[in-house]
Image 1 (tube, rainbow, N blue to C red):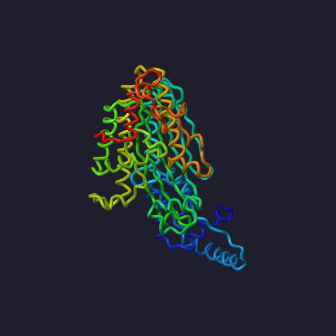
Image 2 (cartoon, one colour):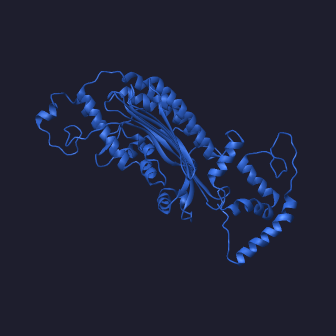
Image 3 (cartoon, one colour):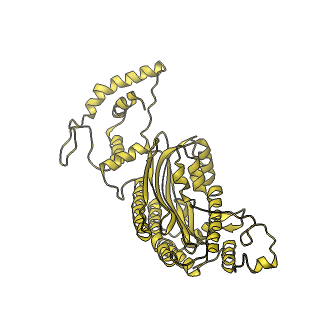
Length: 441
């Protein structure tokens, strides 16, 4: 933005717009309250204001418009950019606390930051080691906080990351999203301003009896680059959580799924079966013909469309889906911590640890080849690679034609009975579940 733009843009607004729309503008940016042009240097409660707008139009507006017309005639035109979303949100946060009347962008940011603090405190208590906190910013706006616990007492690697990103979608990304979102069909812009906020959690315990778990809840919004305040906005929520054990404990799977189902049922009894099936299909590794784990729930692109065919009577779909995401996120600790507490200190053999390493190899394959979040993050300008690849385990391994989990094999009768002198019944049971997903509740 040029210096002349910063100096003259407010005057152009004052000269060319009647009082009411401009008042609406400030109400959108700085929340509700009595704001105006004042000779005072600060705003105090109960202080009256002198509104100078009529005089401003006469004294400055007419000469400025004359100058603007002259510039147009001489083809020396200054481009007046709309205020960036990041600047608007910064102004709102400086003026007031975030509550129900704030834009959904800021409410989602607050939600995920509050839960990041809650999760890291609880996981640190269990592990006995503190998270390393790494705060970062992006040149185009936003940033995040990556909390990583590595080589701990319970967790080989644990990440609890928050990202709040402002930017501009390049043409390729816009075209890709048009293919997946009906709301993008009528969008004619080659590039769009976007906002994305999300909380990502991946926990890889040392003990092979304790399952890996993943969580991600996010909010995405695009806006008209020419009018971010009043132009067309497209928004949606996405996310979910899933369990990835190396060894099967049916009671753990039932507990995990039942806790999530309870959270879903508070909002719509159709959510859990729909999102559970979605999860099984999404976390599927086609080249292995198996799922990544025992599932959970997963959803993407949740917007007003999902409520049209439901029994919901809500007049505010965005608000309703926000509360659903809030409850789903709150169910994470109750769904996973009891399982972790039961399994983190169990005895295990070197062979069982090696099996865990093979299962982690599958985790890596899915995340690097098929995961949409990883792919989007790596394509985003100014991407922070360390945070995007936080989900990968500390250690993993691959074995050529593994007799239990290999995709091409011709086992001998001896291999069918045992591998390396050990019964592999439990590993085979795990593979059967991964190849044939079950209904746990």
